[in-house]
Length: 196
Image (tube, rainbow, N blue to C red; front, side, top):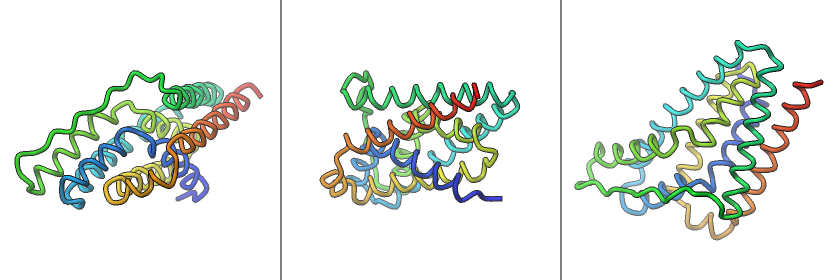
């Protein structure tokens, strides 16, 4: 059964965390060079694979005692908030991902380039870890998975189609601050529930 509140929470947290991420910018660059539908197909497939892996990992965590899961997810959310704040302050050592231009513009070459870029760039990324945390925290893996994949696909679509216009209107620093505050609140709440 789908929990709309868990789906909405997951969507919001993952959307805000992914929007200022380098993969949104990579989608923007790919979208300006290639057919948007081809790029989106590859990027969407890679994000779906990442979400399935994250939800599976989070579901395994639910086999642990509840206090341990809450303490672990709280610590990981706090770590995610710190990562976002470090990015905001410019103290991250992430390098820009190089986007390789395929030799031709065929569907399989362009979608393959988008899939490979996201698959490599997002593996173990903050949003994948957050998705696993949310799957461990809430007993609704389908809701978490659906919320996360919809958020990632929305960011990818925005990046590919209208990223430049969005970035002119909404400062990335503000988005990053909101995402960091949400993760900080979720982390503190999880740790409080672990000790309460």
